[in-house]
Image (cartoon, rainbow, N blue to C red; front, side):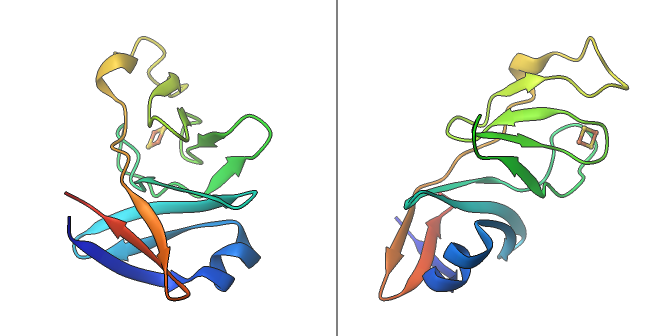
Length: 110
Ligand code: FES
C-alpha cells in the first residue's frame, strides 16, 4: 500500500466532504459520522468533478447531468439525464482505502 497524505482530519470533519488532488487523480473524500470514504472524484460520464453528497442516502450526485453514485461502492445507481440508457454497470467509480494518520487523511490509490 502507498498512502498519500491529503487534508487534515479536522478540515474534513468541518466540511464533511471534498475533492482533493492526489498525484494525477481527483479523489472524493468524506467523513460521515466519523467513518471515512474515498472514491474517484471524477464522474465516469463526462469527467465533471463530483462535489455533493446526500448523507442520509450515502449517495453522491454529479452536478453536470445528475448521475448518482453509491458512496461505499462507487456503483452508479442513477444514469446521467442526458444518457438514460447508459450502461450503469460499466460506469462505476473506483473506491480507495482511506485512514487517518497523525491528524491527516491518507488514501491509497493502488
Ligand atoms: S459528467 Fe457526471 S453526469 Fe455527466
